[in-house]
Image 1 (cartoon, rainbow, N blue to C red):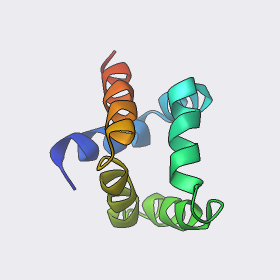
Image 2 (spheres, helix red, strand yellow):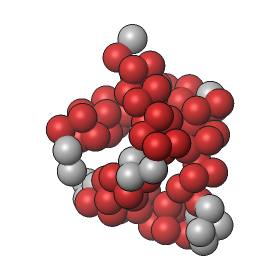
Image 3 (cartoon, helix red, strand yellow):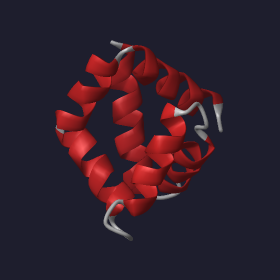
Image 4 (cartoon, helix red, strand yellow):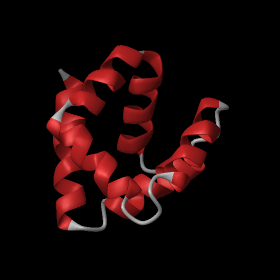
Length: 85
């Protein structure tokens, strides 16, 4: 997991309201669509459950994979910028 992703995950872990606001935003909805596209959300649900238990490896892998596309990178960059505020 790269440092930016780790910092973003930690920020959301510490501030659930920030995570909720993200998920309700346009970028958050686009991110969810991208992460659930292949299997209707089963892998994301499993990764989220593991992340709650402290194992963020699967979630980080999903986000890293997403960032391989220009569209995914753009969404993640906007999310990262908005989380800095």
